[in-house]
Amino acid sequence: MTPPGDRDRRQRRLFIGVAMIFFAPLGLSFYLYYGKEWHPEGRVNAGELVEPPRPLPAVVLPLLRGGASQPQLLKGKWTLLYGQHGRCDEECAKRLYDTRQVRLALDREMNRVQRVFVGDEDCCNLNELQALHPDLIMIRASPADEPLLALLPAPLSALQSQRVYLIDPLGNVMMFYGPGSKSKGMLEDLKRLLRLSSIG
Image (tube, rainbow, N blue to C red):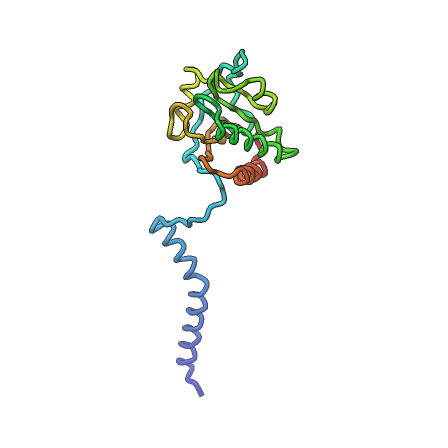
């Protein structure tokens, strides 16, 4: 017969062992995350987050076809912003096509998203551009853009980054898609954001 003291010790060891199975992984994860500042490589978003998001100023911008935008152009909707300095080349045309297809693929949610293109006056055939992209808000690159462009993630000048910027309905640039990024990832990010957001 096992003495009561031995039985108590065995039960205590068994209890501690079971507790370690449950709490050791939790303790290790807290240590790695907070103590070692280790973060898992996996992430949900396809775009590069801008941390912290940068609020963009309310500015009146000249339109490519004459007239001017409203000061609150970049507020109230999710905005895909793309800019091109000089001629709208093959890469530029592809980026505009991708953003158009992403917006159309949102179906019933597409009206919550707008597309803005910033380009030079001689960027392209404006009639052709308008025919291909009837929903595109076309802004003429000018000194009026500078307060806005200065807040975009680097490179900050000349609209040469071939990046598509995502701006939230409050006017904060929060994410960007670099050259080579896939439109499918952009679409998945927007679907997720629209699902989670009650604004815009």
